[in-house]
Each structure stands twice: as structure tokens, then as C-alpha cells.
Image (cartoon, rainbow, N blue to C red):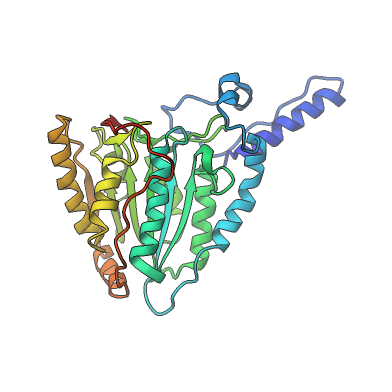
Length: 336
């Protein structure tokens, strides 16, 4: 796997060789998971040396190199902070992945999801957030390919595979080639495509899964993710945009409809999706937008397992939505 930390260590080794060795240094090849084919290749040196990217890095934050070196420790800490599993009943493990660090809307959604599940669904629910945002570089692990794999590996060690349910909630911009934007400039992070995500999940023994992809064109994630024991929800069909992101938005259309408006009133994820789809359709009609048409795929057995989990849940009070950062100007219908 191409790991950003490996890139930096390789670069440092090259600098040392150039200083101490009379001949030209030979840079090691980078071997690992590929970025989606349609994605532009990333030059790590150029990414780290770009004046524009460095200028945009928050002045109060650790350096990009320090952030990368801190990731293994931050992942260990985040996994260690998971609340203890409640024995004798299915537990639900929420893993949130907020991929784009350039807009606060995704951070807002990630923070709210973790708070909502803790408050509404009680002790059998456990949350871990991976997030790209300048405001959380020292408090949340990065939303990166490597950290996603580490999180899933760690969850696999604490979950009861025959009973517990993984809920993976991904929120970011999506592209027409069905990949999610993973970005925290100037860090050279790999992008995440639909087949990439399916491949990562296939490496881990989660019998019961709910995968929510909140992005434009996210319906393209359904075919590689569908299967027994899996519920897939997406914010749009494979060839449509979804709405509500952008620097002026506090939360996406799908995030507001499914998380805020639906799950505050039901603990049934499928019913919540149907309610959210209807609400989104009304908003899009009002705003004269091309319908996003959110998608759902219900694999065999997952509805019954979710019902079994709900038997151990006494829903708590509703949680009003509040942005994790100060709200900007009025929200606009910007495609994801």
C-alpha cells in the first residue's frame, strides 16, 4: 500500500543520499494500492513544496510532516477510546469518513453523526471518526486510505463478527468515475474509488454492514458493495449529482434529511432512508434541481439483523443540528 508516511521517509532518504553519496541517488519505487484510473497522479514532492498549498496550511497546526507521523498514535488512541462492547446483544459500530478537508460541511456532518448516534442509540453504539479538516488535525485521525484500513482492522478485533453491525458513513465530493475526493492539502492522500472501497471491506470479516455514501454520483458504489448482509444507501444515483455542500453550507441535503430529520425520529435506517428520499425530492423540486434519486440496496439478512439490534435500543432524546464550526452565509444548492 502506498502510504503517505512511506513517501516522506523515502524523500528524506533521498536527501541524505544526495548529501553523503558522490553519485546521484536512486529513489525507491513506490508500490501499493493504485489511485482510481481516472485520477491524476500526485507528485508528493511537488505537493509538499507547493507555495499555494503551504500558504493554505493553518498556521496554528503542526507541520504536514508532523501530522503524518502522528497518525499511527492517533489511530491507536481513537480505537482505545471506543466505548466497551455490551455483551449478549448486537452492537453497532459507526465509522465516519469525512474526505474533503477544504469545506467545513463534511466536518459538520461527521461530528453530528457521532453525537447523534451516541445520544439517540445508547450504549450498544460506538463511534470512530476519520476527518480531514484544518480545525481537527490534532484531534481527529485523518480520513485516509491507510487510516480507513487501520480502523477496520481495529474494529474487527473488538466486534463480535456474527452479531455486530458495521455502519460506514462516507461523506465527500464524488466524481463521475465513482470515486470520492480524499483531500487535505498539501498531504499526498490517495483517492478512494467504488471498487477500492469494496476491496478494502472484503479484506475484513464483517458479516453485517451498512454502507452510506453521501456524494455526487454515489449510486456507482452500489454494484461493487452489494451482497448478503449488506445495506447500501447512497445520496444519488450513478449519473446524478447530490446537493448541499459548498463553503456556504452547514450540512448536505442527504445528511440533513437522513441524519437530522429522519434518524431523530426513527431508529430504522431503511424507513429513515425512505423518509429522507421523499424530503430531498421536495427540496429539489422547490429549487428546480435535477433530481438526485438516492439509491438503496438491501442484502439478504441485514434488515432482520438491524431489527434485532433495535430491540436492545431505547432511543434517547432528539439532537438539534449545530455546525462544528461557525456558520457562514446562507446555504446554497451546490452539487457535491
